[in-house]
Amino acid sequence: MLENSNDGEAVRTFKSAEDIEAFLSRAGVDSSKNIATHCQAAVRATFTAFALELMGFNSAKVYDGSMAE
Image (cartoon, rainbow, N blue to C red):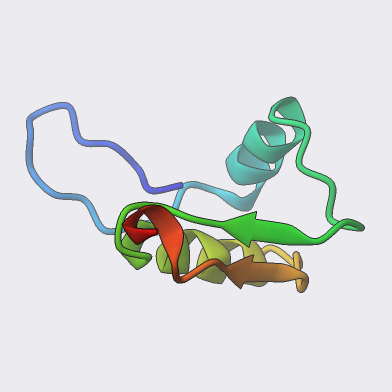
């Protein structure tokens, strides 16, 4: 959901809303359903849930047990 850098430098800007919507659509993410994000320590999961909420996916929640369980 972040822009990538071709030269290895960190980039901290979101992709456009249209790009994110297209990605989510291709992935089959449905805003009318509950969404649970997870990762190893809930860091990326929190970022993803935040980005989803910005996109109007108000049902996104972080599973904070994640891979630690």
